Amino acid sequence: MFSSLRSRLWLSYALLVVMALSVVAIVLFIYLLRNPLLYRQTSERLQAVQAVVMERGSAPQSQSISDAAQNASATFKVRVLLYSQDKQLILDTYSSKKVPLPFPQNRLILRNNPIVRDGKGEAWLYSVQQRPDNTYLVVASPRPRVSILNIFVNDFLPLFLQTGLIALLLSLVIAFFFARWIADPLQKVVVAARAMPSAEIKPIEPQGPHEVQDLTRAFNSMILRTRASQQSQRDFVANVSHELKTPLTSVQGFAQAILDGTADSVEARQQAAQVIFDESGRMHRMVLDLLDLARLDAGTADITMLPVNVSALLNAIQEKFLPQSQKADVEIKVETAPNLPSLTADGDRLAQVFTNLVDNALKFTPRAGMIFLKASVVNGEMLISVSDTGVGIPIEAQAHIFERFYQADSSRRGGAKHGAGLGLAIAHDIVWAHGGKINVRSSLGKGTSFDVFLPLTGKSATTIVRRK
Image (tube, helix red, strand yellow):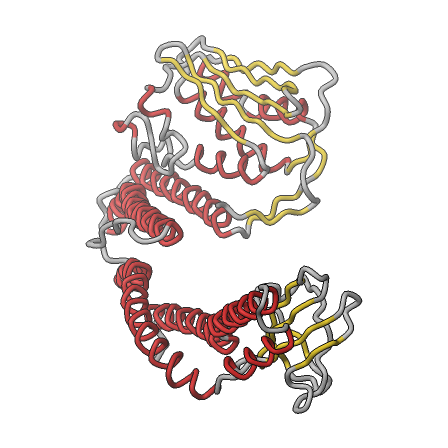
């Protein structure tokens, strides 16, 4: 019955109200049980009788104090006592009926309702006053007793039922609106979550308490991230399809030429075989790149952290690209700081990063250009930069340069010379897996520089990375 959040909130508020009313009822009942109003009325009556006795016992040609006390006791149904200066009992109008009453002692507690107990433990309300002859006149009356049942039925129950019922109804109505204030925004989040991943879902307006509003904003952010992820997946599939379509068409076309005899000469068959070989190699490299990205995304890429000589790594990259650089008439130069410390990283993965960066630099650097590989330590990190004197990257493209399949010049998409646009994405993920970062600086017509920052010390010998 109370399985929903709204009903539980309503029940919680109702229980709190009932508990508060119960506490108030207990305090009120105790207050009525003690009946301080009746006590005060009795004390005032005792003081009035005391004043009468004092006046009649002190005025000239009046009654003696004993006669005045007896008359007052009989008339007002009170007990009158007289004590000597040393507080010894001299007169007690109830001496034949009651046990002696000791002289009252001053108490800090119950000063408003002074009480003294006789030898049997019965409580008496009293009023005491010192006479001109230094004797003490005490007027006492038994403490009023009120039936608990009468208090409950006559005084307490009607008051509690009337005010308590009104307060309970009002509190339940307020509790209902409070429950709706909290639960309704949550219900909207639940409805939207069940409809995921529909493209028609719109962000929910934050309502209710701050915590519920924070939850709603987090849900809206999740919707945006989900849509972005879905769009990224659609773009990824479209890009992969586009990149595979061209080489597959070429492979299919030249294979058909061999099968139907169109390539009837040795040279034609040799050309067809060469195209099939080149295009299949291109698709093979693309598949390997996609596998690398998938492993990095899934957190299953093994990063083996060992000491790496950065100078030797960059010199090896230079030697690897020496034939291509000589053919393109581009000089590759390595510059490293003296006494460069070793770097704890995966040497093969870093070689893959800088191979991609140098390969990109060679593609877009004109003849007689320069490519610089530099390494130094900056603020406790290893800074390795790959700079060129190439055509540069437009500023609007620099924010997207590390996205998969993105190429700054759309006319180059799909060309075998320029690849599928996965190299920079792989480089970015590998650097990220090492706990580093990669930035790009570029100016059109002046060149481009990729700066890779890596921590000098890795976390462990073998690290499984997961992209966040």
